[in-house]
Image (tube, rainbow, N blue to C red; front, side, top):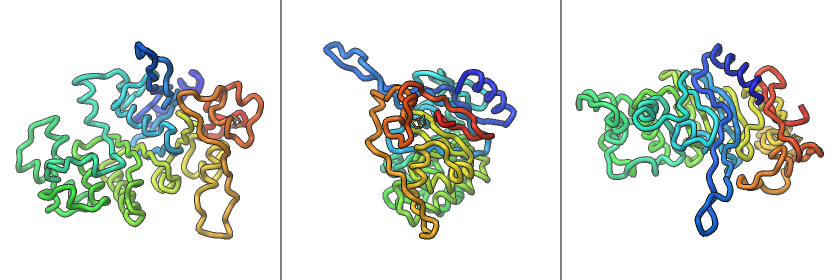
Length: 335
Ligand code: SF4
């Protein structure tokens, strides 16, 4: 996006009640080498992306493994410091917050992790696991806190007795419910859900997704929903951003993205979704080659080494993300 487009968008975001604005966000991991371990390069995990999420909306972020979507989520939550750009949350610039100010801001944004078991302390009772985030911030009457935690367990579809058990006594889906209860404990405004169902059996995935949807209505939550599975993202999201090699290559409403994908990479991803109705089956676009290394990304369009319709100019100029139809953005010279 050019700065003019960004300024216009920023005005639009405010008018439209946006909760989160990400402006030209970059997250690079330094590569050290040589005798003095000097910085000799960078892995450009997130390379200049801009988007915004409206209050109460679910924005999906999709792309192949290693495209930078999880790093984007973690940077937004300030679990890592951005290399450049701005993160504006609920009108406040949180890009450079640190110490107590960052800790205080974090009450309002939480994360649901991919592996629920790894994120739950096996030595603690579930009741204590769910109560822990609250006790990090405030003192609460023990009886009142216990009642609150039990009410959260009920909200995520677990019995009150779960309070007294340990994480290993539950199935994968139930553990993810415990993780969700813990995430809700501080009554956050934004939840970044990073592949929240990819470690679960297919049979319980839709139950957890439907739970997230019903909790969104009840708690007026805003989600950044990260997944590699396009069917899951379609089920959950109002708008979707497609990432490739640290870049956002297309952003559109759920309906527009699946009905009329514009970017050749999005078209290839969507063509790979299995179609249950044989009469509607489309031809699958198979991409050649591997995703280039983010430590040495190609010049020009980051997708040009694999794009089936690449042109000469594509290796020279990086196309900006432009709005080509109302609310439909694409980064490709074809538009
Ligand atoms: Fe393909 Fe060129 Fe468009 Fe990139 S800019 S997606 S290489 S056509």
